[in-house]
Length: 158
Image (cartoon, rainbow, N blue to C red; front, side, top):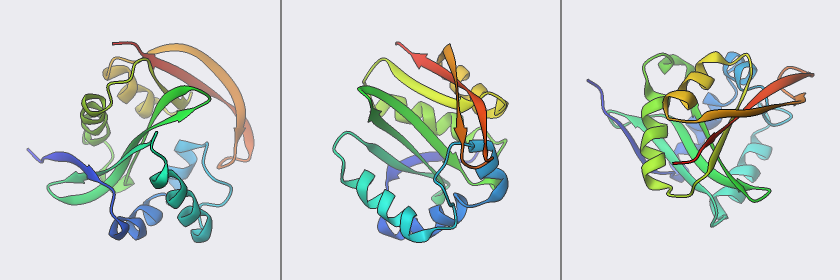
């Protein structure tokens, strides 16, 4: 079985992560993303900002040593949230779930929150398998889709 691991994000990871995060199908599924996934300057500015924040745990996801995505915990409006992104070529292999499990061991803060577009069943499944439970929904503008959609909010207490 392939080994999923986390490691600190490196400058050398940024080109690959940028490419992963501009894949059209991935962007559509994530829904709530930056204005223009093809804007490298905006991506670089965002990554510089979050990598400098002490309240962000940002990790590269590797599969047998190969970079396949990223996972993070960050504070927004006083709540700690998790997020993950896996290269679409590796979807359906349990990588996001394993990466989230590893991150949960590294980040002791509880409660933790996760969000996903309500029609992103795969991402909701990852969060639920990790023990997150639904606590509500919100409707917001999904830049990737150009419309307002429902987003499911989940919480992990233990």
